[in-house]
Image (cartoon, rainbow over all chains, first blue to last red; front, side):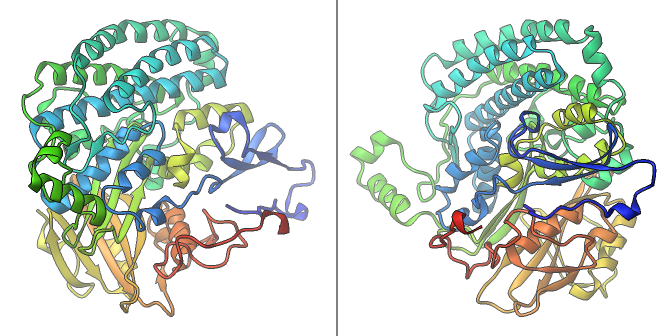
Length: 403
Length: 150
């Protein structure tokens, strides 16, 4: 967060043009949150862009060091508020790796199912708001209609629409409620036709095509160099996806494609995300079809809270419950860097334990932070109008970026 | 998991593999050589750099680099220990452009001086902020901020 970003001194500028400095944000609707970009303009085109972040810095990493291992889950929700379950999952996987805990197959499948619903949810919000930025308003209403269904599903599973905290260390917070299969199935079977609907509104829309095709192109090498991940890098033709490269939570058992495109522009990123939603729907269907039987929590009484009923009837469970709630769990000393594929790209949690009841360090390598770093390379020497389309295509969440 | 000769032995202080993750402790003065050597071995992605504060231990800070090779599907972690009274290390931006914001973040929150960084300013906290919030001796609560005095 910087208070003094100044333009170049005037004598350095050429005599026939005078550059103007334009402050965009931090309260501008197209910056999707509190992002400030200082633009140096040469007429309509951007000469230099300087993103300024930190307006939503809430010190989550510092807070993590003050809470115990289980309590940190509630903070991970608030990092990326459009992909809470991906963050829950990444943190839980990291701590489970330190604890060397085996997660029962049913919990793993449910985690995959929920992570994919999260991906669809996040992409729907992205598609709606991105289309709204570029001037296609109808898509916004349609996307939020389906998003509402997903939020209702999350509410059914966890009791919360946004801050779910449903994936916990050792498995899931609760058994899924009765009748969840039917509701998820109804939604997911209907989704492909809904996606057709969005595509019918955009794929042949001349305004949409003019504003997205050929916009925001930079070379693949440059993208890797700046550290872009997720649909941005896949839109450049690299099938970079943590679900395939380092499978976690039994992703290796699922059949799915990693959509890529070689155009490397805003349209390519749109195409990748829409195809990803279709793939996610397939993964959810496979998870439903192959859902194993069994518990949803690991058999590790010292680290996982006991079932409510057992806690009330069995002395031993009551003791463990008391110990976990009052003292927290102790995680063996060590460090781990766990990566999951969040809807926005590579999400990594670097968790360090010194063997006590609280983490020594939780560092979040968030996709929005990495992607936003590439913004100047993409928008410099382009028009202001294009910068809106390019910013939208990066799909950043400022909570995720600033933490 | 990884070839033994990933880096020249003169750069590495210690090699360990725990929980399937490779960690190389590097001589802090030679970090740029190590990064260049990794880049030459197709570690094209700079994932992140951050720090861990081991206060009150000395040397207090660990500067931790995560690198990835997409082509070879490998990940490696580099670690350098720097002291608390003068936390200084060469900036990785000359090798990997992606290090820019991560180093600014580590400077802002830990006060580590990345020498040779093109624009080492605060990124998360306001410019006038005193102290480095992620240090272990910085309190979690108790700081008062007066918005009127600005």
